[in-house]
Image 1 (cartoon, rainbow, N blue to C red):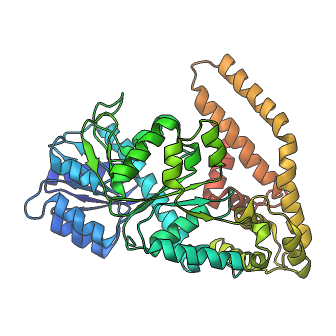
Image 2 (cartoon, rainbow, N blue to C red):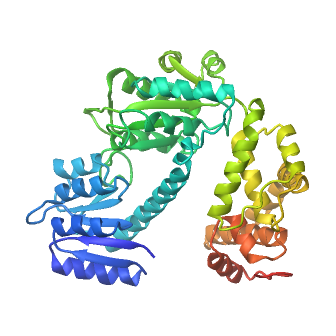
Image 3 (spheres, one colour):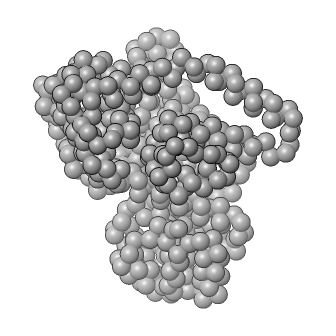
Length: 472
């Protein structure tokens, strides 16, 4: 259940919203003015604000500015009868999640609210994660000489507005370095927006970065600011920039050179003050030679470079990281911290950690889930690492079986909601496997899946699964 604040001077609209959203299971607060909206946010930060742009007294834009000063992560949907006016676009530039024209289609509004609440949830989770991170030097832990040199580099570049390229293998902490540079820069307090250039499909990456104008493509029924505009005054972190398509590389180069860009489907250049940090695990020099990465962009990026070491090159830091992760993870999962047995410490020092710091954290998390309260022993860690490594041996066989089932459903039930059928099939496999490896312990299975216990129980009932042995 989410808490939603409605700010509108139209009493009929407020009442309609209240009734509609309560039927959807949400908690709703309604106020009739911008001033009352700001006061409501000061009293309690809602998950979502839906606010009219034009009201007597304080306008929606003025109220939004004050709300943002209370909490910059606040997710806001603007309602307006003037969708082409500069004021609505300005609200989007300032970071409003979206704006919608009055009168609006109720199903469309409900979809928008659902998307906005998901954004709010992710933002809250990231914020909570970063609270843990920042409490211990942004989780860039380690007293080794190589890490001390990295801390010094961060201190030097943070004081400038220089473009920084962070290089290192997956799991070495490239985003944490970018966060630290932003935190200690003059842009602290302004937005820090990471973009993973691999996770977003090529067809969506351009609009995600630069935004788009109304009518730019099918379904673009309103203009939207991209991440670069939303980060104005702050920092954009382009993770895995080596995987960025060449056509978007050209636009990034223009942004770096001219401090301006053009929205997708637009004609006017938009100037923006934003710092660019980038990261890659690729060999950019080889990619340039192979024609996969623009040479001019490479030289533009490769001015200030911070290289991150592999975890196996930081042997002195492994124990410090392990104790930190155990403390944080046990607190997060509301479990006692069992600590490490002596033979586990031996394992930590000799394992190669091909997944680097991320692998270390994931290994300890899995060991905690199966731990019975005694200090984590070497055998527990080797079982976790061995389980992860051995999964690859059956991947091909499992893939073939899954593909066969997908083909069977698509062929046999063509047009009969195949997608939902296959999602249920996948969910049944995953939940069943989690119950299998936890001997039917629902609490441990829920932790393993990263979901609440009631959610797991609902899935078990939905899929008709039977638990065995232990069902606590």
